[in-house]
Image 1 (cartoon, helix red, strand yellow):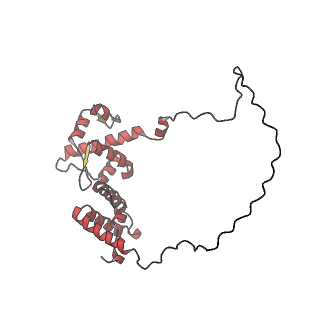
Image 2 (cartoon, helix red, strand yellow):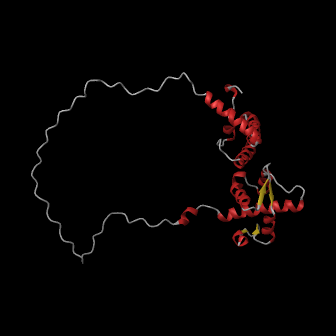
Image 3 (cartoon, helix red, strand yellow):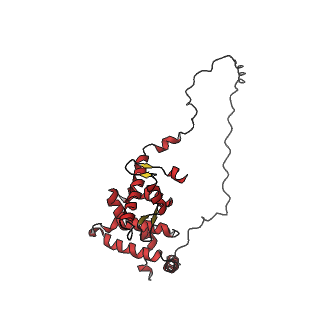
Length: 242
């Protein structure tokens, strides 16, 4: 691929060249949802096509390895061999630098010796000062202020119950796309991202290569055991894990 036509697929996906496969999948899914329904006048259609090409190349180990080699060659070609060398240090004159004349030291006026410090009275009450009091230990609870913890638990419970219902009613199509989860929860993917991450990491939901979510056996046990309840807003996985 000529240098003028080279396209950096990592920049299109907004990921690092060292990004793991799971990271590339997650970012591709989020960007695809964002630009899939965008207005054509914003060049979203062309960008959406580039997203699919970038994901298809970087999610395959062989094509990614070949692309990485091509990318390294492109980056090496960007180094201009005829560029001007960096400016070196300024020429040093052979003449010695002039030595500044020493300023005459003024004679300090005679001062009386300092008076001896008074002996502190152990019974005296210390005088009030304007110095601020010593800092107290940080209250960890203040970092949780402004966070809707109960709302987060309800989102987790709602997601796992939607996937549970899909598994029971349509066992041959148990997985739901992020768009279907958004519609079912009436929330955006950014509002559901933390909840989906938690459910995936705890093996309550499983995500396919296509980015669709389905409830696991562990998730069904949590629902049927009463540890997850959307109506009551309860998500007691600590007891379930115990």
